[in-house]
Image (cartoon, rainbow, N blue to C red; front, top):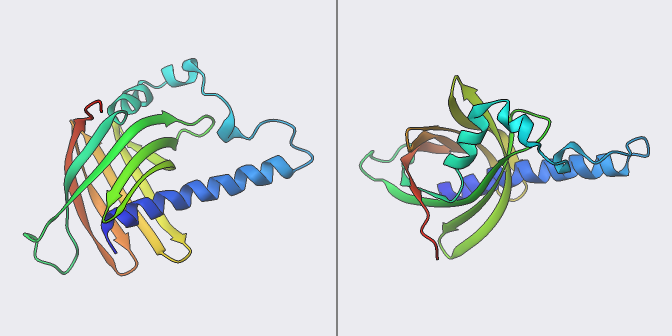
Length: 175
């Protein structure tokens, strides 16, 4: 299975999980407030941490253009990858959750997918984290992707397959 499908599947799994949490909160008679994931993020909360605004700008209207490896194959046997991220937004309430609107192309598939991801911070450096996310019919996925100085790099795993990924961030051209 391709790395692009692994990435799409892993992030979709996270989104599906948060949809289930939201549904559970909505059906709870004791909970009369909006679920945290649908509340508005105030400008003040984003302004409290300048990393958030910077990362949102870095990952909005951008293409991730690069290559990935597959463990067990020669390192010079690289495959191209390309993701388009139309918008990145910090979600309220939890410093780790972000919403992305991404376009993922692989094979005959070309889809725009809303995703909820976890972002951890190594000082000022954002790292996307996905851990053992199971997607029925597709498998279990993990990834770590670090963003720094207009570039990205990381690792990915899908079942017993995995590898590295790396590339650069390029502004998307208006279509």
